[in-house]
Length: 391
Image 1 (cartoon, rainbow, N blue to C red):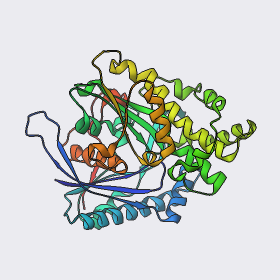
Image 2 (image 1 turned 45 degrees about the vertical axis):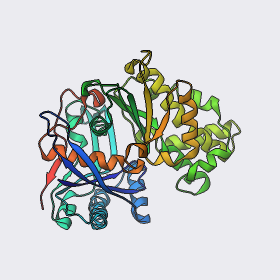
Image 3 (image 1 turned 180 degrees about the horizontal axis):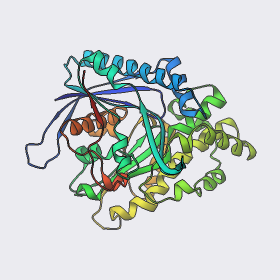
Image 4 (image 1 turned 135 degrees about the horizontal axis):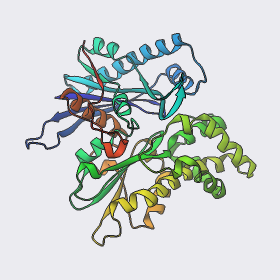
C-alpha cells in the first residue's frame, strides 16, 4: 500500500509528509516492510504558525477560535499531502495524519470531581479525506492514554520495526520540540524496548531565540556556539521532578513551553549571562538531560557492562541540523564509547522519521493491528491506535 504519513511537531514550524510503500511481512508474525519513496517538508504559513503557537500557550481561548483552527489545519495538511503525492508521482491508498498537538496531559489532574488525563491533536480529518478522496487515519494518541499509557512516545514501533539489530544495541534519539529516545538492546523482542521523553530539545532554544533575538531558531547552533554554558543553572534544573522521574514519562509545552523559557532567561540573567550564553545554556540543557537519562535509565537497561555489547546513538529530528548540539552530544557520549550517527546513515532523512512512523502506525490501524509499545508508553495492553475517516 502507498501511504502518506503526516507529522507536525511541538515546534509548530510546519508539516512533514513521508510517502511510503508498506507491505506485510512474508513471514507469519513478522514486521511489515517499509520503503520511503519521497519526503517533503512544508512550513506553516506565518499566520497559521502564530495561531497554533497562541493556542498552545493560551490560558484560555474561545471555542470558535479552536474550531476554526482545527478546520484550517485540515486544509493545510490536505495541501501538503496533495503536493507531496504529486511530487512523488503516486496515487495514495490512504493518509495517516498525526495532527497538531494543542494539549497533552499524561498525569491525572482533578477536574469536575474526577481525576482526568487528556491529549488533543487537531487538524480536521474529514477535510483531508474529502479533498484527497482517500481514507484518513488520525488521532493516534487517545487509545493508548485510555488504556493507561502516556499516549507517547509512539515512534518506538517504527524504531523496532526498521532499526533493531541482532548484534548491536541501538538508541534512537529524536530531537524535535521535545527530545525522546528509544533504546533497543541487541537482538531484543519488542517487550524489551525502552522509550521515553527526556525533556526539551528545540522548544526552549526556539522560544529563547524568539524572545532575545526575534528569530525562529538558532540556525546551525551559531548563537549557542558564541555563548558560554552556565553550568550551575543546568545543574539546578536537572534536579527538578521531571528529570528525576522514572520512565515511562512524556512531556510537552505544558512543562517546557514559553513560561519555562522565560524562567530560564530570568535565571541566566541573574547569573550575569549574556543573551548568547542563554542560548548556549538552553542547548547544553537539552544535551545534558539526554545524557543523564541515558546514564541513569538506558545504560542499565541495555546491559552496557556486558563485554560484547556494542551501542550506537542514532539522531533524527530538526535538532540534528544544530551543529553545536550535535558536537555537545558527541562529546558527552564519547566518554562511554558510544558513537553518535545521523539517521541519514540508515537511509531515512533525519527530518522524515516521525512522518514515516505515522505512515506505519496508520498502516497498522488500517489492518486492525496494535501500534503502541506498552513498555514505552506504560499502557496496560496493546491497542489499535487512531480513527479512520472515509471520504
